[in-house]
Image 1 (cartoon, rainbow, N blue to C red):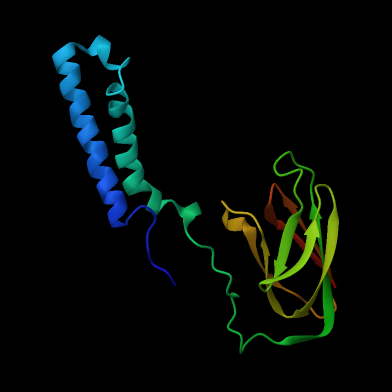
Image 2 (image 1 turned 90 degrees about the vertical axis):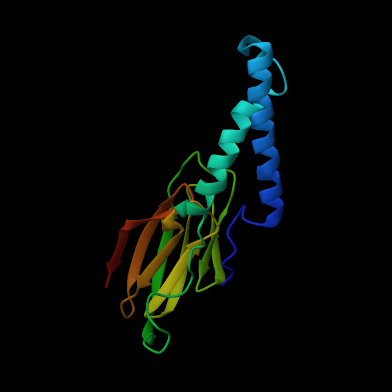
Length: 173
């Protein structure tokens, strides 16, 4: 897995040095010409941009929603067994303003299984006991759903705003 952190290459260190220099110049200009002139000049923006950039430089790599989401199943492949009778899972997409014009792609074990329109539904056939469903969205841990299917089960799960609602997963055996 690529362990390179965002905003941590040598190019960004050069930009960081430039932004800090702009910040120092803005402070010098502010003291020399008075602070009322500071925010009407280009150097004044250095006082705003430089601290924001420095904060982002250290905080962005720590944000959880920017970390890669693992698509490996929760169960080891040698423990995952095929179902004697396939299970069917209906994915119901509740109406939402978020992403309403987009069809959400649903992946079953890293293969596209179906697309679901806003307010629509789709049925996926599960042939393995443990499966991973994933949506082509980002920003939440609920874009991934680990499913343990019963033999010949019929179930449903809801999704809204591009994420699964795991508490709505129900099986009727």
